[in-house]
Image (cartoon, rainbow, N blue to C red; front, side, top):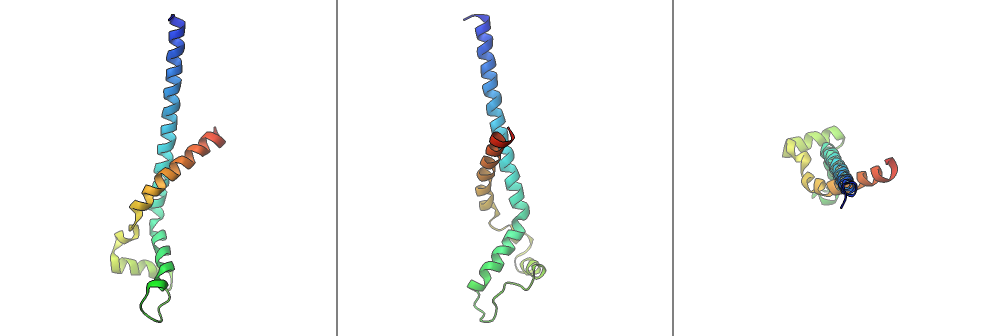
Length: 114
């Protein structure tokens, strides 16, 4: 193998490594961004779920709502369960969100932005 051919193979290997590094970077960036966004919006998601299902599981005959307003719902969760209750189930949501966001971001960047 001549020097030119070796140099060409070396460049091809570097290009391949750079491309995979870029792919990995896009996947990690998308996954982290989606996970952070899900964690930041977790309190609102938790309240949404409580408002939706409370009327289906309540034992009180005249209590169809979890709370009358968003602020009373926030106070109710804080009072009964504490601050960290707003992030109940967030770990499972992040496990789902990371690959979903990673793939979406990678496809977007590869197809539309690139």
